[in-house]
Length: 292
Image (tube, rainbow, N blue to C red):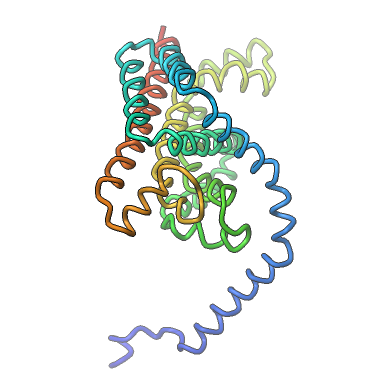
């Protein structure tokens, strides 16, 4: 009765051969195409370096002023503007300004990439049930896979640095953008679409002038979630050389520096709250305009 209590798994030698074959195949692929892939991502690396240097070298009053202006434009709420301003001032006072600007540059690029890639994929899913049935399981895997696993193939292909970190963060953070874009477009009132068709609107006119504007609150909710998930990957991405607030946290974990870990962790939380409040407020404003 041993077969009932012990699962008939593959032998150790068989598992070792399978693992060896997979590792060898991927290693050969990375050696063959790794350089070409690095060259493909060179423009992204140059943009990352340029944006990071721009944020670091720009005087801090200008950065805080721009953040305050964006916060006011998006929320029309002086409490959010005051909270964002005070948070950034405290970050600077406690000596975390440069790391915060590095993190801000990474999050900005990851969010832009997630929007550029996630929006068309979400639109495709919304207009094709076949595409939705194919892409949904992939998104399920992307959201449930442990985040550390993303680092393995990326590092094998591109080594350590900014670009591998951005790719890992985008893979981890893009699913909400795709899902909520799909959801927002699918929930557009059918009567509105029928009225647009009655006026002779083409497919692209309906998409650009009807579906996307009405789905904007849901799309901005996806952007909000993407930003939050990107920030949650900051510490993990620091393991492969991504500069920012994650590196001091990782150093604090390694050396048991409680104060360093606490302050830099709170700085990440402050950024998350700023992004969350501003994007949520803007989404609510769009929803109010739609209801009006």
